[in-house]
Length: 239
Image 1 (cartoon, one colour):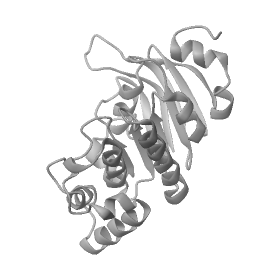
Image 2 (cartoon, helix red, strand yellow):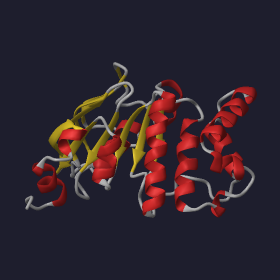
Image 3 (tube, one colour):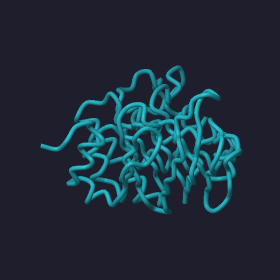
Image 4 (cartoon, one colour):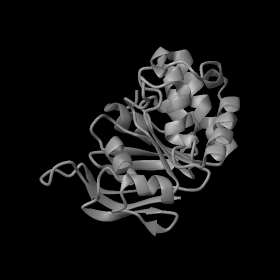
């Protein structure tokens, strides 16, 4: 479970991007963060992951205050996985080597067994295991990035726009992969996404952010038909 409690954070001392942000994602949930560019979605993920330390407020993972815990400790001790939006695979390495990086702190036999499991779940990886990641399509790279983050069996997974730049076909495949991660792994997923309707279809709940705060929250199914979502997310009133 992830709880962000009144977090204030930013990249420079003078500017707060998060202005008292509070969100939560419970065990086994998919929760989506929506909102226009600059509203704080990616900054919130980076604050949870440990790339930014909140100036005020707290980040709790399974009840433990991890606000000041660095990224590497959150991955190993708090069970956190993070897939950034861009440059999320090592293109000069093979698919096998990318997965090995994800499981580098596992013992050798466990890492091999975990790689085999993920290749069963994602056959595209098994077919190209010794090919360089540079040879993969954008959607395939996203699948690889997801699988690499899953190597150490995280309990919590942060995804920053997993469908960015993908074709409609690959977009559907990536969202299906996200849905299967929750079904197969039981992982709690907190996801930033610009494809609002597609993300809401696989989510349990969502938050609509505006200017560093939560403007609206609710069950995903209800938000899909809420005129406020159009107003806040698209910047205009519903017709």
